[in-house]
Length: 358
Image (tube, rainbow, N blue to C red; front, side, top):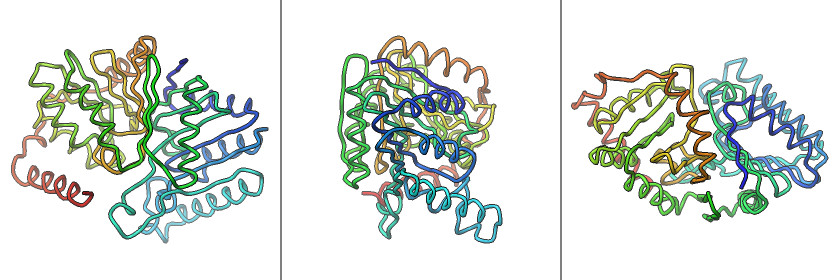
């Protein structure tokens, strides 16, 4: 397996545009959100110009209700939002007319699962030869965030991920795993997620020296397992953005980190959407999961566990060490020390969400 880390959108797009231009047979793009802005236009133009025979874009229905981080029902009279809705619809119509098939998956429904169960995967597969996984969506606001994609050049892995794309396209997503020396890949269907995350939690439980996690939305049940690791004198560091696009999560991270005795660092260089976990400098866990309850329980995700030493070393040098330098340690966490209403509110929310999805 040949894998390369691509940090932030510019590096990702430079690589992806080259691969799309070289494609001969198939370009499959799966994204959580796809919007009719400058970044959506970049992807659309590359797909239209590609010589590949089979060209598809699969987006979650989340894009039908949220654009540029704005809930459409709450911004019905906003002219800018209305213009973006029009541009997005126009772009989709153009793609369909010019040979690129586009589809939305996971339509919303009235049940908790139909409402919350999103396909959160970010995946590109080209000619069953090259695959990309990670956290970057095709929208302008997302492309401005700090994030990570992994380019994988391996026929067998690309074919495995390509089959997952086609199952999602057909509306029959299922859990599957594929492993080879240096890496294992898991596709999560939103039903059997806990069995895959049991593997991740086992790795946390067997950590000997260090755990580093970057995530904007990390939540339960991961915090409790990190707390247990800390009790074994494992050095646990959580890095999350100071300026989170969902602002509640910054206070939540402060509260949980204080409760669990975790070293919390706030990323100071804008919004970080990057999600990754490094355990004992040996196991690198990457993909689309934010290590939150929705990923653990109900989202469709891609999780990779990489042990290839060169990739792990690259993550340390390209991501972990620079991000730690660009962050501030939170020594005093007054928000986290509020044991009364704040703690009760969070516990009730966690319990309610758990019961709702059972």
